[in-house]
Each structure stands twice: as C-alpha cells, then as structure tokens.
Length: 415
View (cartoon, rainbow, N blue to C red):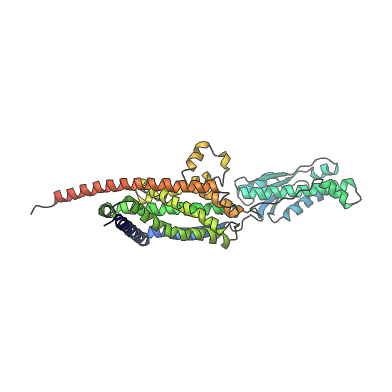
C-alpha cells in the first residue's frame, strides 16, 4: 500500500468518524426537549417577540399634566401648541404643583408643564418668561418626548414674539430675524429615530450567541448527568483523534445555526421594516466566523459548567453584561480598559459591531475588516482550546470508566 492510498484511507476514516459524531449529536438535539426549545424554538420566536415589542419605534401621546398659574391667552397658546404634538398628550389640568406630583407618583402622567403666574406679564413687559418642565427620568423615551416638545414649542413662540415686536415690512426680513443661520437636520442611519432600529440588530446577534451557548451547554450537561463516559471512552478509541469529535459536533451545530442565522439577519429586520441597508453577501461573510467562534466558545463553556440548570443561570446572568460590552447601549470609549479587554474574549463584541455597521450603515467588508479578522482569530484560538478541553474530558472519562469497571468486577459474586 503506497503513501497516497494510506492518506486516502486516513481521510476517509476521518470523514466517516466525523459523520458518525455529527449523526449522534444531531440525534441528541432532536430527542432532548430542553435543547429543542432553547436551541431552535427560542431563536425562531424570541426575535419576533422582541421586534414586535419595539415595532412602534418611537413613543406617542405621552400623558402630561399642566399646571397653568397664568391663565392668560399666551399660556393657553403654549398649551394648545404643546398638545398638538403627536408625541405628547395633555391629560390633566392641575391647580397646584403638588397635585400634579401625585399624578406622577401614580404613573398616570410622566411629566409636568408648570407655567408661572407672571408668564404673560413678563412677556408683555418685554422681559424673559419661564416655563418649567418636570419629567420622570425613569423612562428615558418619555423624557425625550416631553422635553423636546416643550423646547420646540418655546422656540416657535419665541420666533412669533420677535416678529411681532420688530414690525418688519417683508416676510424675508422676518425670516432673517428669526433664523439668521439656516440649518437642516438630517438623521443618519436611523431616519425615524426609533429605538427598535437602534437596539434590535445587537439583540439579534446576542440571541444567536446566547442560545448557542445554552444549547451546547444543555447537551453537555445531559451527557454528564446520564453518565455519558460509558459511551465516550469506547467511541473516543474508535475515532483515533480529538479533532474528529470537535469537528463532528461543531458541524452539527453549524448546520442548525447557519439557517437560524440567515433567518435572524435577513428576514426578521425586513418583517418589521427595521433599517436594513447592508449587502446580504457581506452579512453572510460576517456570520460565518461569528457562528463558528460562538460554537467553539460554547464547547469550551460546556466543559466548565457541570449541570444543566447552571447553564441557564449563567446565560441569564451574562446576557445583559455582554450587551453592554459590545458598545451598543453604552459608548465604547466610556467602558473601562479592563472591561474592554474582557470584551475581546466574547464573540458577540465583534459580531455586534460588525453587523450593526454593515446592516444599519451600509458598510463593506473592508470597513469592518478589524472586527472580521478578530472573529477569525477567535475561531482558531477557541477551536484549539476546545480540542484541548475535550481531550482532557476524554482522559478523565476514561479513568472514571476504568475505575467503575474495576468496582463492578470487585462487587461481582464469585462463581
């Protein structure tokens, strides 16, 4: 037998072993209800539920209480313009600030507009008047709607008052007085200023990572609880290599999440009309190393966590910190250096940053090349670490298997 034929036999045996591992792992995924729920059903339906919750993008008709101590035509004009905004709704008129504060305590309103008694008097005397805005800062989106609407109404009334005082003869002179420097606001990458288009892309990536870690961890936990070392030792002797075990298992996970990843990246944003201007091929190129790095990271993670219930607790505990470390909900520049270093170990950090830039900003693969390279580095590093960890697991399982067999032989009755 020449070297070429020996090499071909080794390759064929390796492929056969990988397919055997893949088939065995796929059978485990299908027959375990917990894994099916967290590995398949959650990635399918959780993005829909989360996207549906934020489908309105912006808040409308935020209830506000008015405390008008002026009772003048100018104060009523301010209130009328304020209530005309689609973002807020004047729900209560109160006689005092204390009465309005009680409404905020009951969460019947989320803001107060207080107009003092000298509001109209000061304006008629050509003096500066004040309007106080009180907002419940526990709801940031409500604060934004209440405060910005008050600012826009005050600016519009300021312009009208300036025009009435100057007595210009042409509209052009009035325009120069109220707006000497014209500006145009152009919101980039999120035209409607919606919260959904801002947060959903990062959540979709995090869902892929967390459900992958959860599914792989549950599978490994079930194997330990079912004394899988009874099967692992003879199978490992049959495989003749740890690479075949790791590649066979990862191929099973990748086949499932290649479909789920395409569903979450390409279909979900279009269903809910979120911002989606990225090239589909570029998105798939990013998803390839991201899913692989998550798989190998999850295989390492599964060897550390011993029981099924611990896996679920750790995934719930780490989901929010992982989201913050991506720099999506908190500026990356304001994250302490030690936490930025930790974030480099997590696949979602570079996956979220690359996906958001491509999906929401139309970036090309060259624009996200650093994140793309870091993801491939994670793939290689975590693959070899997973091989080492699995090798150690097999050695420990072999020892337990031998010890158990010796105990069974010692306890067997003599014939």
